[in-house]
Length: 334
Image (tube, rainbow, N blue to C red; front, side, top):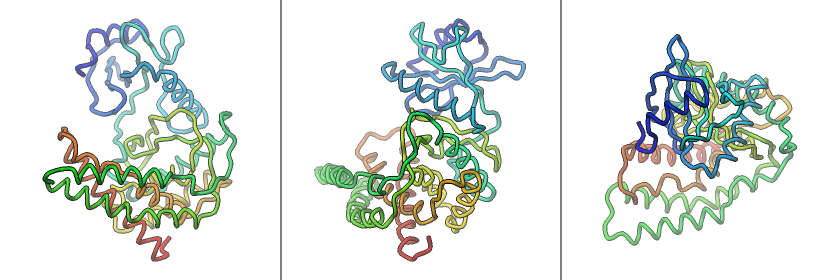
């Protein structure tokens, strides 16, 4: 159990607010929530999401609304179990949480997209975007691609990070790598600007908001569920597609990721034919966004955590992916 979540209180709140009881076990995932599997027996298993910060519950409710909206359009999304009084989040007994169907036999897409996954993910994302375009919070539009990321702000972040490393008396291997990488990426920001300026206006609409590999659940080559929607907000679709289609771990582990990305976009287009996004726009969006991000280059400045080695490896993969995307664009492969 989490140090912040008392097992007895959690069990009591599950019973009072949801009419559910069973064996509770911690799921080691989530950055803003504590997550638990509740096994009620007889094949009934639930995913309990406990919110650490109650001040953001209005945003969480908006995210749940968008999740339910996506589910109503045939997007593979876990069903929410409301409280016995019909609320989406229980907020009593010192615990705020929501309860969902547990996605059985699935794993996240953090291992990367391969084989048949490219097409099935493309189709699922196309279905999702086609339906989310109808959300009343925002009418789809086109905007200049330069709005995809704030490059002057990115330069300032790099400058601050570089200065922090230069203040260190000595640098270990990870810190030296992070400093070299920050300097390299900062020098590439003008190329990121040129990439965005070269693109036509791009489609903007309500989207998932955090379509990263940990939020895409796979069962073999099939999409089992898309989880952890953000509150409804307009986003560049090219950016959202790039986040999953140009995932650093996918690019790092594949010798032919561009072919896979083409398969993803073909399947996407069949499900969402009114939106025309070509391969170059996706790769350029993914490249510019990655170059403009300092994550996780500050990790070596902080005390190591349990996942420190994995975070550093992800940093290497992310930088390598940015360079591969830039090389593909320069070579005219996309």
